[in-house]
Length: 311
Image (tube, rainbow, N blue to C red):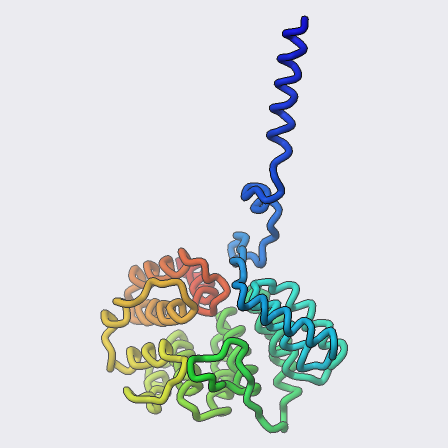
C-alpha cells in the first residue's frame, strides 16, 4: 500500500515538473511571442532582439517625448520603436501623433512606411497620398536619418521619401502606372546621386514590367560609372547592370549575406532575369531572398509579392 502511494506521488511530481517550465525557458518564450507581422502567404514573421545600443537610443527618445511631447519627439520615439521591429506599436504611436498634429505630413509618411513593413499596402497608400497633399506648395526639407550613413550626411528629403514610398506601395500592389508617376515625382525632388540611382532603379524596373523597354533605357541617361553615391551603392550597381556596363556575374559574386542592401540588389537582378526571359533564374534568386530573415526590407517584400504572383 505504501509503495503504491509512493509511486503515485512520484508520477504526480513528474507531471507537475513538466508543466511548470522555467519562465526563461526557450520553449515558453517562443510559444507566447507575438508575430511582428505576417507574410503575404500568412506565415508569421518575428523580429530579432534589438541591440543594446539601439535600446539606449530608444530610451533617450522615449524620455524626450515624455518630457516634451512635440511632433519631432513623437516621430523619433515612433521611429525607434519601429527599429526594434515593433511595427504595430509604432503605427499606434504615429496614429496618436496624427490625432495631435493632423497637418504634419511627416507623421503620415512614417506611419505609411510601417504599413508597408506589415504588408498593409492600401493603408500605406492612403497615408502617402495624404502626405503628398499636405506638402503641396511647401518647400522641401532634408529628412534626418535614424541610422546615419558612414559619412553622417542625410541624402533624402521629406518630399522625396513621400513619393518614393508611395511609388513602392503601388509597385507592391503591381499597380505599375501609379508607381511610375510617383517615382517620376520622387526623381524630380532632388538631383543628388543617391536619389538619382534609387529612383532610377525603380523607374527602370517599372518600365520594363510595363514592356516599355525604350523608355526604360532612356531613364538610365543620368547613370554613370563614377557617381558620388554615399549610401545607395547597390542601386548604383543595379543601374549599371541595366545600362550594360556591369556584368550580372560580377554582381552575383558577393551576394548572399543578410542585409537590406543585398535583398535590394538580388531583387533587381531577379527582376532583370525575369523580364529578359530567364524565369528559372529569377525564381532561384527570389527563393534565395526569401530564405533570409530580413523580411522587412523592401527587396524581400517585393520578392515575396513576385514569387506568390508568378511562381
